[in-house]
Image (cartoon, rainbow, N blue to C red):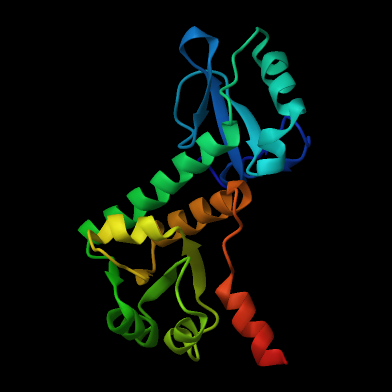
Length: 204
């Protein structure tokens, strides 16, 4: 995603942000706008905030032609296309961690990694029970948590059902959190933030 110290300007909001908070686009074949989620494709990069409102705005479509200095074709449902790509990137990240032995799945194994301090990020399916999640996290509220579409864990671990996973601390955990933050801004349906809900309940 580029160096953290470098910033890019969103074409619509004009805000400067680190690249990991934005979506890069390039002009592909037939003057078609192509999302470059890894920020590695050749060509002049055009950046938009990782926000569904920004991606869906008429100003975004106008900005592409202005920045590209040519008439370009913008895919229908651009935000949906980006969302699908970010889901795949989260799946790829978890699958890579699995092959490297840096992630475990299941309540018991996840709890063991959490209590031992090995965990860097907790991954929770969108349909997981809040009460069960509270038991999983008991005493460890400082850990980062990402809530992902159910199909991600099911696919990553080749199971009929997968609810919880924990990824070890390290570069892959940081990468997953960054992809999740972009996904959260782009997703059509806002996934629940169980850590926030549990914290609010504890404060009542």
